[in-house]
Length: 573
Image (cartoon, rainbow, N blue to C red; front, top):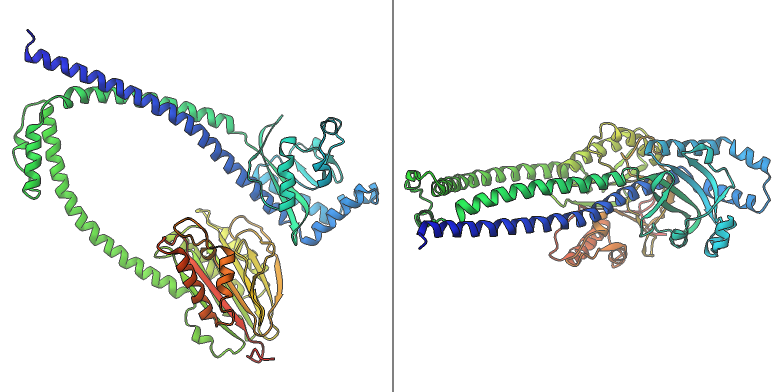
């Protein structure tokens, strides 16, 4: 007949085996799932990283050309294809200072960004649509004609007027990009003699018309090795975890699962019923087995709970102190932007109002407006990447740099170029700031603006409605050194109102993750287009609040509106 001790041992072994088997099965299942899911997500992450880099390069390279130069080069290429341009003329074009400058800029960009190829070309859309396998084999189907090609293998670099085929798999993607001007929804990945590459196809458009295409090819040199290392690391880590889990699980099953814990349960109930009073009975347990270990653990837990209660009291006090300091920081940041609009009430040429609501206690948005002399008004609207304290500090640096540089004179483009150099220096956090900067002559209403990756402004002419004023942006400030920024001329007539804002307005999100968007912004502006700047901003904020409802604010919301009255300070006439 089995003794009680033998029965206990048999039960202990059975439970241990069950725990070990379950742990093995769960760990193996998690390992296989992690490998399958991890490979897919890791590959997609790599694709996304290379795709974003390729299109950033394409955007920057396109910015090297003015609208006039784009039209000129595409027109010359068209004439060459028709036989209207001689080889001698092409040779003079290739050796011209402008062509050499653009090619050198693209070549430097390719070297700095590690790209295989950056090419500026024109695509024959009719030929692209009429693909045939025979044309592909004989090279008669070559819809791409090159203006400038910066290829890493100089022996195979194409010259002005040369043509090439298109990867058949992506011909429809290219056609859609040229037609709509939008970046493709798919990753363009090619496998060449040089390895796996990511392609960017960026339509170069002017006034809604595609004139050319900027192509970028960057090598995904680490893709296969990274995936192999990722799988290998997961398998090794999983095996280690499997061994550790089996060892610890078996130990815990043997020593902690089967044995009774009545004493521990009793002491736990005592601790609860006596309002966190620790009993000394646990410290007197000296069985030198799992019961003693559990007793000591419970005692430590009870002591830790009491310490935790004390810590909560301290943390609460500390949180209140930090909250008070952040409140002061909020006030300091608010004081950095002009808020006393009555100071400008004596200037009859314009009315102005602005507001800034950070998503956190402090944020990265800022606006500014000031007079550089008696007749010139400077307007600034900017948005620093990120939120919170880092963005606020970068915001303070950017605002100071812009105002200091603007006071020295120059066009908005000149100002942003100099500020960019100041902001790039020491930017270890790799933050950047989008900026819309304008300078308006109050006597004539004529102005110049430069846009560094910021939202489009909205303009209402007197007795009209607000419309978005869209033109090509430059890159954001502090993304890289040596960026030129283009100036855009405009003119305000008496009674015109200009509205600028950050993406916190159009990207305000409701509970269904729907964006407020440009259409709702224009609708809010046009509800009462004759309103004063202050009333205008209040109307927009009211519409945003109604749209968002109880959804939290994820981004800073900053707006500025100015109504121009003309030299006489009146809209009449």
